[in-house]
Length: 252
Length: 331
Image (cartoon, rainbow over all chains, first blue to last red; front, side):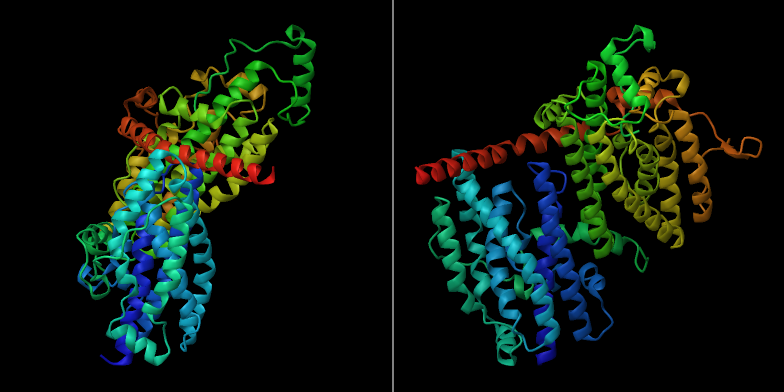
């Protein structure tokens, strides 16, 4: 794999994370615990959809085969998606959604921070723009972990269960593979393993304040970055891609 | 409209001589177009009617999130998805402004939500119809939001200050919603034969329910006179319905779509379109709970509310703990 191919794959990872998590959050619209949350969850989803467009359009440019963000989002099958397993996990209850969001936001923030130093100016620009949005996402999801962890007995039980259930999907966030190493060497992106300590510091401190117990490091589920997903992704794509698949080449 | 058949609790309109001095002074202010504000004296029937009307409007916004929300995950492009999500989000925002406006009349959002969930409170009949294809999202924006604007623009001048101000904010966003709906229809009407058929089918299914949104004919509209005297209703149902037909038929023609009404024709003498009779039996059945989606809509709303209860309780408990800690620290 040459550098250009690796960069294309790398941008797919960035775009697909935003696409799939934005999709999951959009499922909440109209069903959340309060009107204020319908507004807030939709805001985060909208930010992520916007980031998807930026990353996937850039991916298409780098690839140079005439694919834009929509073509990449709507016309690839699950094996070609490169998002982390964490973001495709079902919404579950509100605690599950917020735990997933917090784990992701805490990592996303650090990753974007690293990307603002990318030698590729287009990457650095998208990262800088996204970083502002994600700072707010992180503040919000962290706040919900605190509120639910240290709220009522029931909310504590649910948040603890969510933190435990999703833990095995966090290992993948910090594993560097050949593509990551190419990016690091070219000065295009940060070393994922270097983000782990800061992430753990924030997650640990938050769990402690929220009276939650963080699971012990253990076996990590991995595969999303290489296109080996959980069963959930296929159903997301069935919804997401329905119209484009049913009416090929139509303009909407 | 978004509020249909709002009861006033008044059998007939009082003459000026029959009014108490307070009532007379109140009516004189309304006649002089002076806004009524929350802390001022108002007749109990005015207050209760406004609560019914504003809450019905708010409930319509909240229930209205469901038929459109149904297509957020299936929107055909990233841009369409973002626009639709932002639109449904706006509706949640409109619901919020309106519940706040109702709260100024001495009723809480929780009470109003309980009324909605128990099936006691009504919402617009239109949201009990299903969204079966993507074209329905276009048709809702074009027709349903179009009809809503027709009613809400005059309500910006209604007599109750907080409601009038909420309407001013809402109308700005609604006109954007209508444009995006028409834009979807335009893309479909200019698209493949299947897309055009999809657009025609959506118009066929949404046309009559949209006309029903304005409520029964003036002859059968028993509470309108009092509401109009109070200036919480500005135009009659038939007047607005006619205006809507006159505005919408040329838009349908521009799209190359056919309005599903064999009696529709331009009446040069009246300067308006004549149109066929609305099936009021269907309207009353939908209002009574027998529309295609009434039960589903309510069940979905109740489920979200009940499943969110522990979250709202946790947020309250956490806020209380935090406040207690801050107080202990200060002491």
